[in-house]
Length: 153
Image (cartoon, rainbow, N blue to C red; front, top):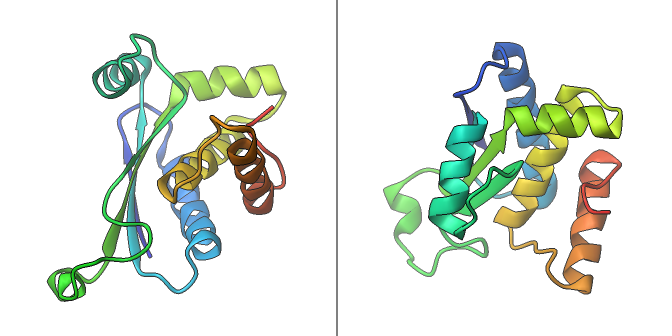
């Protein structure tokens, strides 16, 4: 498993290193035995608003976005594994200012909130959705498995 955290918003290297470790642990649970690569970006509200507008048509910032890459269930191309050593899973983008506000509202720390948003984004990358009741229940169960709590209320 390879995880890269890009810090576009001031959070400090400590949070980035912590998220790298958390992401590796979560990926081992969600995708046991698979060799995947994940990118995580910590951004500000302006950048998140732009991404949310461009990709989802919502002109407002959001706390987390997930952009899947590749095929979650394995490649149909038999030589794809020869081309690269790790299959890309996707990108998780987290808005640090919104995460900080969420943390205040929930009475948690920023580190815990960033980890919760990371888990939520990762679950989306492996096909999770919360638009339907069964999907929301499954996502909540996976979040609880990864962290002991859920972002879904």
